[in-house]
Length: 264
Image (cartoon, rainbow, N blue to C red; front, side):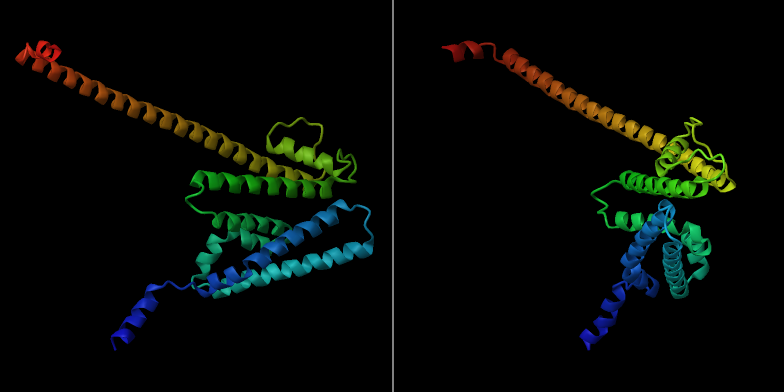
């Protein structure tokens, strides 16, 4: 009877994952693979400018299938959630991925989250994990914007983009807010992509500057704290030496013949 009474308590003490969490654990890796597959299909579709209509149609069908799988995954997670409106509120990016098909590549951002989530919290500091996440997301956004910019600008009248290298150069110049002006958008789609990338670039630069400044300040504080600790330890040693000298002087004052006696 005692064992039967303890069993429910022990079972309740173990926190079981919810159905949505179990689904996410089971489908996390396949979704990341689908995101990588989509990125490959999208890059192939954009960069292979001489592809045949049959290949374009095949890539389009693969694109639709991947989008459908993303939609099914999101709807399953939404249906398994106990607080559905909170789920929508806390997953705006993934909702955007399903509603607006061109944003599906951003699913790779969640892949970065999955990778960072497996890191030991004692191995990397919070600032380091955030820096790695922002760096991976920045590289992904730059690459995707370069693809989208190349897709929009290549072949357009008056376009300055003749190859994907030009699009990558434009992406690097725009995200750093340098703006040489040698490559600029001439289409409406290209201007919208430029607006998004420039906005992201300002945020990334602000984050990088803030993180670097914070790291330098922390290092200076560490050096100052170490120097203060060393000074305190030196002061303690000096006080101890002074106390020892005072004790020796007191012993000599009380026994003036002790030194001579020891010498004989």
